[in-house]
Length: 323
Image (cartoon, rainbow, N blue to C red):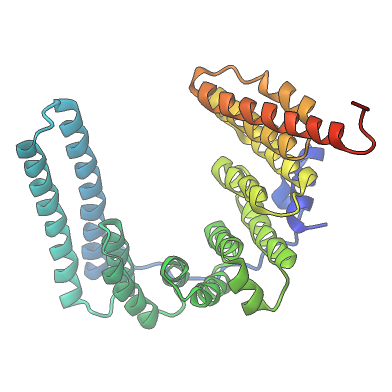
């Protein structure tokens, strides 16, 4: 039984303790990091830099919303919007550059600047800053994780495997690192098979075990549980019971009717893939939200098509009814 399956079963069968306390051995404690001195002038300057970065994001969001609400979508208005966005981004970029000219060995500022550059789609510039941050402070797990994310998208993916492993070694209490690592293993199955020397089914198991650790550390995160449950669509042969268990767990975390009924549609899809058509139809009957009507209709159409094919296969088989 996989670690993820243990967590899901524990959570669904127990009402006395959260799955994080019951399912897996406790993760190793995170490394102890000395907190920066808030009275340090350099630390205060760094904090103001982060505040400027955060403020810029809010201002850009407001600029875009104001543009959309104004209803003046013409070339002149779009050009003015681009000019104002570019000017604001340039101001923050220069603030980071000025700080780093004075404090070139400030690893956390390099890390934050890399994240800023990544937000404005300068991935190459972001990698340069993250790599400098990693070299300046090789014990900072965020630098390893950010670089792993980059290598997972751009390659070589084996670097992503190594860097995620290092991030987890440095901070085994951060669920995002396990989630990212699990997703990369799942998506790059052939690379993972070669790198770890395992079979495809073992790759699936490894990804699910990484997801299990993420869920153990963050057991009430609906989006995490939803993402994990979706993984089962790509696993062949279909692990029907495990998939339904994962979606049932996710259902328990849903926060409103749309999320709950969206999960019911996923559960119906799993039933359809498993050939359990009556159960799928019963689940779809519970979906009444207008926002999900189109999706429900597509799944119902898929249900009818698969049911018809299955019926035709039975009738054409030697043991089927005589013509």
